[in-house]
Length: 189
Image 1 (cartoon, one colour):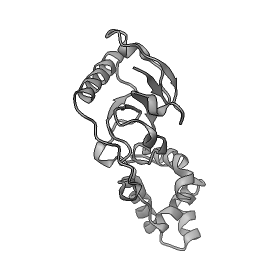
Image 2 (cartoon, rainbow, N blue to C red):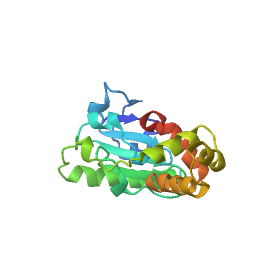
Image 3 (cartoon, rainbow, N blue to C red):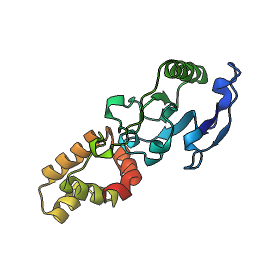
C-alpha cells in the first residue's frame, strides 16, 4: 500500500496490522498511485473543488483531517471528493487508528464507483455576483459599514450576504470566514 499525504505523515496507524506504508508528498505525478490520501481541511475547504483529486484512482481513500468542532457533511462535498472519512485532529491516536482501519476495511470490501468528472453538475457552493463582491471586500479586511458604503447598499444587506456566504461554506465564525476566503481567493475574485 502506498500512502500519499497533504499535511500528515503518521504511518503508525497501520503498524499494528503490519501493512507496508510509503509516505510522500502528494503531487500530480504520484496521486494516481496512491491508495490512501491524507489531507488537512481548513474550515470551508471541504466544500471546494479539489482538482488534484480528479486525477486519483477510483480505489483510493481520502482521510480528511479537520480542525473545527463540526464534522463536514459528505452530502456537501464536491463530486470529485468521494470515498472519504473525516478525522478530527484533536482525537486520540487510538481513535484515529480505529476510524482509519474501519474506513479502509469498509472501502476495500466493495467495488468503488468511477470518480465523477462532471464539474458542471458539481455540488460546490457558488457565490452570486453580489456575494463575490462582498467576499472580496471582506477578504481585503473591510468591515460591514465600509462594504455597505463601497457597494452602495444597506449594512443589513451586507450582513445578509455575509451570513449566506458563511452558510454556503459551513463556516461558524469570522475567523473561519477569513481563512476560507484566503483559500478560495483565486476561485471567486
